[in-house]
View 1 (spheres, one colour):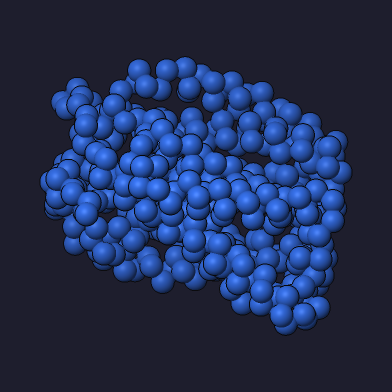
View 2: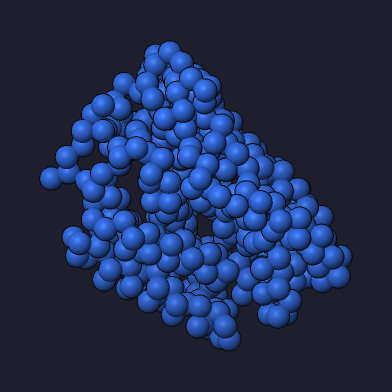
Length: 381
């Protein structure tokens, strides 16, 4: 569908303003600095760049989960925001392209113990690439079906078929990525609930990012998103915050009670220096503060307060990945922090620009979805 035919369904560019120009500027400034730091301090830049890619990757994979859940249960309330999830999930493809430099920085990121345990460093790379490609294909296929639905409104069966084919693939692929990309950084350490722990953060942070985008673009939805939708958003954020806290504390309790060298090394290495403070920041900021803010009904019904909590949760997800990835790699903290800022500028600017271009190119929500009217008339009890 073209913008000239139904402009009311498309993004109002006045809301975007100078943001595309700012993102291009950040990318233009960030990429040369990334190259300079990669050549000058590869030991510090490699883990930082990997952390930034992991942060954006987990947001995209979380969006793919919400798409799959939406179609699997044939949800009505989330029809109006599904297109945002689709654009977020399709950022996995540019993220895959941006991850190519990691192959040259592999020795700066991968633990020697892990590499020797797998015999060949190439094997985990192949598994990671295969898992990412499968998720990319799933995300692209679902978005293409959704865009076709804007023209004919007859893709409901295609959604369900693609979803039930993708759900087990997503579960296996996400688990492999969480183990090979992040748990393996600290050689010899294992955790039985690690994939589901990472998944809880992915689902929470991607939903929080979606809420931020929806509130930012609220005028473009022409009044179709109401207080009932925001109340549902808030209840989901609250439930997922509890879920994340339960898994984080459960993992700590199991490791503390078992007291096995193959498990407690994870917390031992994070008990000193900045990592110990980051751990307490996660306890307070990732669980306690959102828990208290989201308890009252009034917070869930007010978009500004909900946006504040959602933005805070996205920030805490970034802190969590810094806490997961950086301590085992023993880099210089000054150059690591500088590399994080530069990588955020380059990667974040590039991905945001791609997202904005896709957001303005297609209708902002699925206009012929079979459950759209039910979504627009939502009443949350």
